[in-house]
Amino acid sequence: MSKRVLIVDDSIYMRSLIKTSLSEQGYEIVGEAQDGESAIDLAMELEPDLITLDNILPDMMGFDILKTLRDEGIQSKVVMVSAVGQDTVVNKGKELGALDYIVKPFTSEDLVAVVNKVL
Image (cartoon, rainbow, N blue to C red; front, side, top):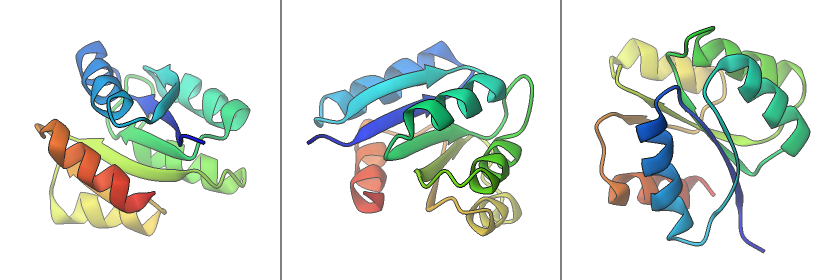
């Protein structure tokens, strides 16, 4: 059975890039969200194996989404995807339960390698 992925990013371009990269590797994209509220709703409804989570969304920070999901008992693995790559930000994501952190811009190969490693 293929692993199920939820993509969270406010950029349609980034969502499309992630979707294409992972679909080509046999991952099933079960949902896409462009803001935090949708991301939380979809994560709770779908309980995907993996969530790719942008940290800067129009309505909230990825960190807040991550904390909410953990508080709700959602066990999905999370990989943060963000243009902000400072160590403090990366470390905070990992403290909150993200298993890895990809800094934009990235290649499809980088993305797939991280997702394969996490799953």
